[in-house]
Image 1 (cartoon, rainbow, N blue to C red):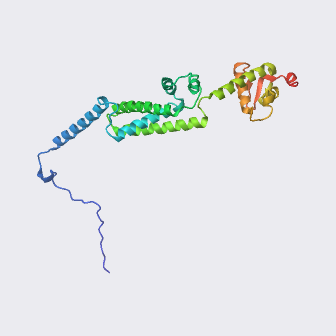
Image 2 (cartoon, rainbow, N blue to C red; image 1 turned 30 degrees about the vertical axis):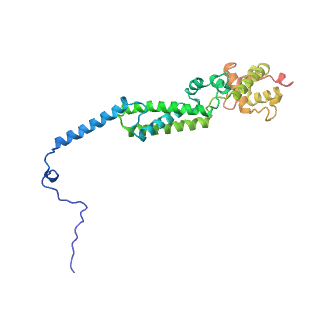
Image 3 (tube, rainbow, N blue to C red; image 1 turned 90 degrees about the vertical axis):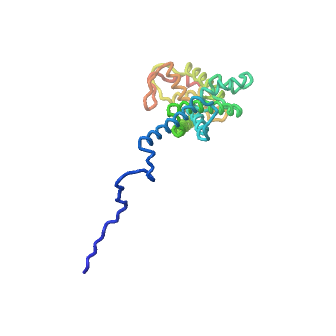
Length: 270
């Protein structure tokens, strides 16, 4: 029986040149010259990039990538600063519109939320693109003119801005509208009137007792209706606000207030 021997296959060539040399024996370039040439090219590219950052017009771009980066920075700044509720909107709106003629602008100047007209969105787009250009130039200055790094940072900032915007939508963090503000003011006045007549210091009561007493005091809120919509949670919120500036009664986790109570004798005649 004959025996066979096998040799392992080599994946790489193991033969090396005895002496390192230049291609086609071109000795006009040595390692020091090559290194010097690479350094000179890097310096030239760096100077070209920094000249773009510091010396060119703001509206001059090296290519579509720079323009895209500026727009992304503008979008990121819009979202990170609060989108429709950001502090730039109202001053810009006052430059182009008259408060006496535009109710939405009057609401904005009063610190309330109001929808914006489409032409103003166009103006704000231009404003934030300009802010994006300034931000892009600043980032390029610190990134030594690297367009790739500026683009990557702009994308990251835009993604973070989207997360903030989704959070604002989920938590309904936009300011109240004029109708919401007027309704809240009316409810606070009504609760103050109710508290003056029906809530007394001392004793204890459950928050639901206050809710029921409030509904009995104001007949329009006794039953749910579309004309006077009011939930129990809204009344409990009014109670917390009133308590925080008047009686400072402590509420237990079960919903009992120690230090205030409903005047049941007066409430019986309601």
